Image 1 (cartoon, rainbow, N blue to C red):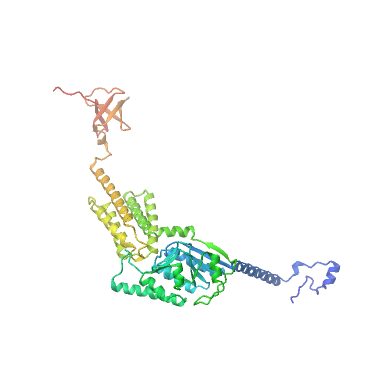
Image 2: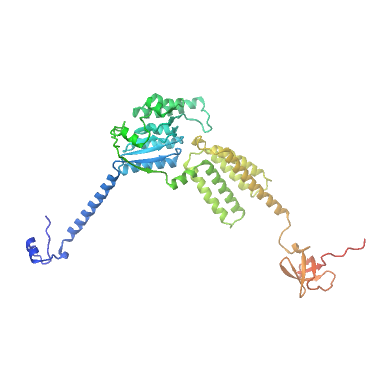
Length: 467
């Protein structure tokens, strides 16, 4: 037991004596290391209590991540963050409430790998009624510890297709389909589900409703709501992880959804938005090159290009599409400096359309630039550059708007002191016939004497000669 020392270094009196005599201990005589140790111990206990209370708050609760979107890098990060939170905060399970048409294969596989490695049970619940887990969504469902479906939902149609929706060539199709079928089949096997039906979703694009999926052992549970779901799965052990599900009656639910920033990023990777941002960036940069020092067009153009490049960074792109887009930009920029009578603008518009349609070819059918959007952007670019070229040609053919020669033929008004007012300026002037100029008279500039910077004026309507 630690000894308390006193300032006079004598032995401490007994407690009874201290109480009787009303003595008070000198606080400054307490051993400093002991105080520090006690403080650290109390802080550690407080932290442990806080941690245990936080963990206890999540015990008996389930984290539900609403997922009504396609599978892409942004939604991938959202779902991975939800699983990580479920592990970190000790939730009984993480539920992915799914309604998706599918999406990118690369993002799908990243989500599947995270679900398989999760230390918390992950439940995919296709809900509410009317929802579906199609294509990549069906594969993610097969990776879940529990695959549940609400009535009037469906799952399947996982056959890989080309970006245009057509089938692959024979040899390539065999490779791609066999790979996808083996992938979903192995997930189904390890989780105790129907392997042949899972492979049929890939090979034959089969799609099953909730009741039929349950009958064929494709899904584990059909539940009308979360109370029904928790009642059916409580106490079950997952395969192959062997995790025990603890969802007794009264299990609470914490719902999360994509943040506003994630939603903004999700919009920015829309291929149509990417194409629009790239075209706005091109226009802003070209206008700034035409009129250096405006700043605003260049700033907007640079920001638009950065936003467009973010989409190119996130989504898989075709090298041919990128090169065609760069070539289109080069055509439009060259049009601003080379007289081609619109030929370069037309070439840029055609190249832009072809490039934008090929740009996201590897991303799949869900991530393609609409032909209508592509044509609208190309025609707008061609129209803007055509308008600029026409204005430039008109400016070249028009007489110079500066210099004294522009005053010839202009109407003027005589002021006092032999001056005339013309085009907002006062000039010294004399009449062409030598007659005096009367203040207030209207005259017309006949010529400009460059040596003396003097105007020669006549009456506004000189008399006609004899016929």
